[in-house]
Amino acid sequence: MRDYYDLLGVPPDASIEEIKKVYRALAKVYHPDSGTLKGEDAHKRMVLINEAFAVLSDPKSREKYDLSRKHPSDTSAPSAPPPSPPQPIVTPPHLDFGTLFTEQEAVLSFTVDNQGGPASEINFSLSAEDSWYTISNIREAANGATYPLEVEVTVEVTVLAAGQSYSEWIDVSLDGVKARLTLVVDVAGPKADAAKPVVGNNRTAYRLIVALVVVVTIIGVGVTWPFIQQVIPANLPTLSGGGMEDSSAIADSEKHGQVVYTVTSNGQSTIHLFDLGNSKNQSLNVDGYAPSWSPDGSRIAFISKKTGASQVYISDKSGGDLIQITELAGEKSGLSWSPSGSKLAFLNRQDQTGDLYIVDMQAVPFQSSVYRLAGLASEVVWSPNGKILLISVEESGLRRIRKATIPDGQMSILADFDSWNPAWSPDGQYVAMASSSGVYVMNAEGKEQRRLTTTQTWQPSWSSDGRFIAYLSDNGNEQPRPELWLMDSNGRNQRRLTASGCWGYAWSSTGYSLTLTSGDIASQPPELQAWWYDIETGQKEYIFDLNEPSISWLH
Figure 1 (tube, helix red, strand yellow):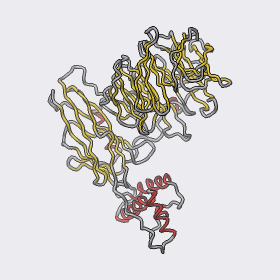
Figure 2 (cartoon, rainbow, N blue to C red):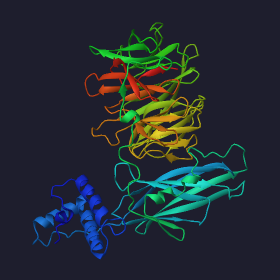
Figure 3 (cartoon, rainbow, N blue to C red):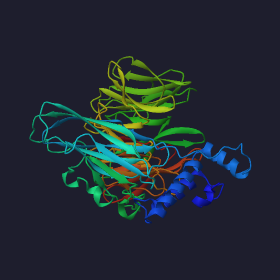
Figure 4 (tube, one colour):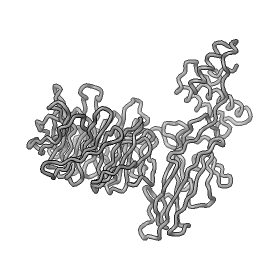
């Protein structure tokens, strides 16, 4: 019986992560297509490596193998099973490019994962040769793993007739096991200013540049990539040489505005206000947390437990004119003003169910509309025109972004995959959202879906001018904590802004700076610090201490 542990060079108590790491390293040496060693001996060695990995990477197969290894004379111990076949998974399975004018091109992406045994080759087969779509880029996961792969598809409709709909497909094959992706596009007539791509930069000169960094074989209309070398580095470049620079001289022209936040002392949480223009800090002497400015700056909504159960209150900006909005059992969260300030939305959780409340702040007395949610919701986000609410709802262990139209409250699913933290673009045309596999962007109808990053993220948010998207990610961190990252709104120029952790942030009204929170989130209460950060210079300035990572700007 072969000793699979010896074959891979790992101890019998090696973890699955260690086994996967060693397997990837051996594949880079012995794989017949992409390895450094060639020939029949390398091929035979790779067959044995695949066999060992298939057994040791599967808990049940490994348990049986370990039993037969300890008792080699016991014929009742089952022999190791042959390697299982690969199983390609394409996400999403459908790319809808929407309506494009005849001068336009667009770029969307999908991911390829393998949920089966190891594969030696991946092949992409296109349904039509010299068609209106091409595979323009392939990127490996930023953590160095073989999967998931991010595949970009570029569409040019100059060769298509206007007024028609078109549909094609791409087959993804792992050692002959296939999964299909479908593509559709509608073509409109010419438009003078339509030469720019949808959610992306012009890619004509970028077409198939991936051929410079990976081995490519084209057979008919098939494109074959042996195990791809990493294209995205695990540690992307940071601003200002790798982290934030301390500075006490942030430009006065940028450092202005007011923020509200929470301070906890002796078990009591109070709302504080900080004026960034004159560095004046004051307590509003209001017992509460999770403050949120109204758009006109005249009122502050917050949650308080001073009567026992959490309730929603509002006050003026000095903490006076206090009004209790709710008298409900359950935990309140997700305070969100409509853009006009005429409505206030929040979530109310009882046991394992949740409700969405929308309060008419102009009615006397206040009037509430209630919508039952099919799961537990965690946040509410208004569209810039105040006509749509996005809600992150957890159902059966998966989170989905639901869309509610206002005022009828009609619910639909915007993103039918595990996702959270939705954020609108300033013009209301697109939505960014976080997921375990990166930041996704799609239009308000859930179409034109594109993945911008490749690792787990939280809290994506557009700058007020729409140039950038900030987000939190633990990509490449030595410590298991999130850091603040920034990228162009099309996903380019990803860079890390912090190096010592970030638990929350908020954009300024200009889009050139933001506030962020760092510190000890695990202490009780959390001991955090707020910083002013200039994204143009990479400079920062400490501004105040707080005990809750959220900060609300007055814009």
